[in-house]
Amino acid sequence: MPNPRRILLVEDDPVINQTVADRLSGEGYDVVRAYDGPGAVAACAESRPDAVVLDVMLPGFDGLEVCRRIQADRPVPVLMLTARDDESDILVGLGVGADDYLTKPFRMKELVARISALLRRVERAVELARDPSPEMTVAGLRIDPGARRAWVGEEETRLTPTEFDLLVCLARSPGQVLTREHLLAQVWGWPGGSGQTRTVDSHVKALRAKIGGDRVRTVHGVGYALEERT
Image 1 (cartoon, helix red, strand yellow):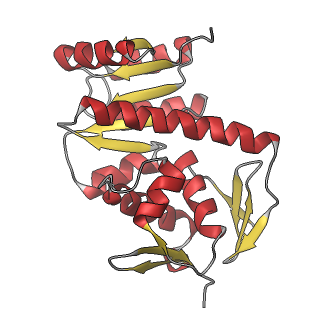
Image 2: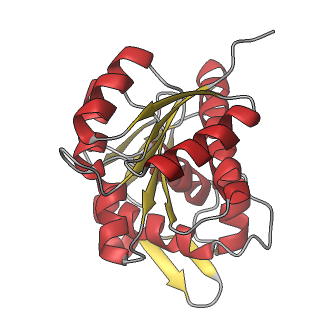
Image 3: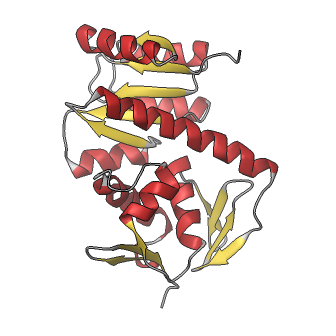
């Protein structure tokens, strides 16, 4: 049997930490736990997890600083937990390398689904690297799916795995409006009707900040399209 996927769980509330750890263990994951910022960075370096579930509010230093430090050491998928449903806080989290976020209180079923989707995207990225798609040039961008690199003009831009997958999805249908539900299914692997369209909106805003806001057109009530700049 293959080794179970390892999840680093960082949550300072001992009751929540234990409850989430028990559920993830029951789902077959190998769970490593930490309770503060310094402990999270040390545990990530030692355990080399496949994904991290990371609370924003932590003793020592906060989850944003944890995310910065662990991503600088080794890119790893991060699902951030936040008690604040504030868009600016969410965008800061995405900006320091988080791949997804979940606001408290959350349902365990949704947490497990989000982790599973993160890990599937990692597996898909590995498969694409073995059999890469050709480079794309669209909207003044050069995108190399196999190397998972993107350039704005001549300058490379650093994207999180989710941002990169979102960009590739849009770039494969330039000028076409893709619904939020379609993007959720293609990029996040979530079924239609999941009701998590705000996740798409937050990631599009984070992507725009890196590639230029006028490249992604919003069709209100429908979705987004990657457009050539005028």
